[in-house]
Length: 129
Image (cartoon, rainbow, N blue to C red; front, side, top):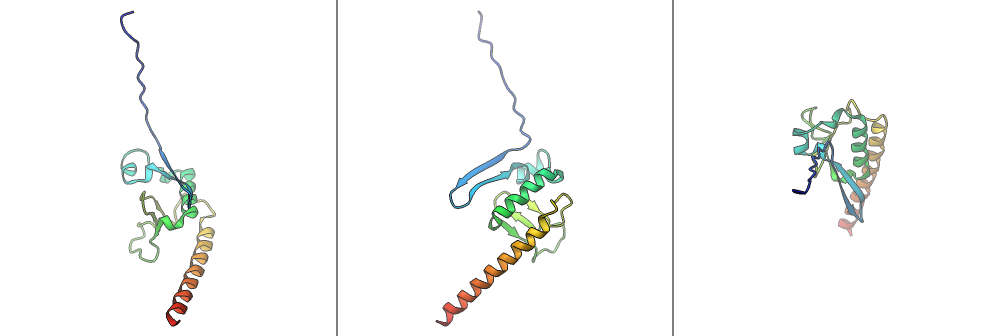
């Protein structure tokens, strides 16, 4: 035998999910294709209905991890929501959105509005006392 036969493998990644365990939030996974590097290189998953549903599920599971740009939008092409860490973007009027997105946004806005009202009342009562 003259030498060892070696085998080399080439791995081509289409999508990579990073998973982080955090006891206060549970599991969170992000779609690598939507980070700044991923959107320039590799496949864009914006046209993939399954991927879009996963992004909306990530949004609704942790909405505080996303910037809400709806009030400050000057350009309709700018996303309604943008992830604070990964840069993933979501549009409420997106073509490939699941049908439940708009109703869930309304529920979330109602909840957030009532939480904001409670915070305002608590702040006012602490100022007067």
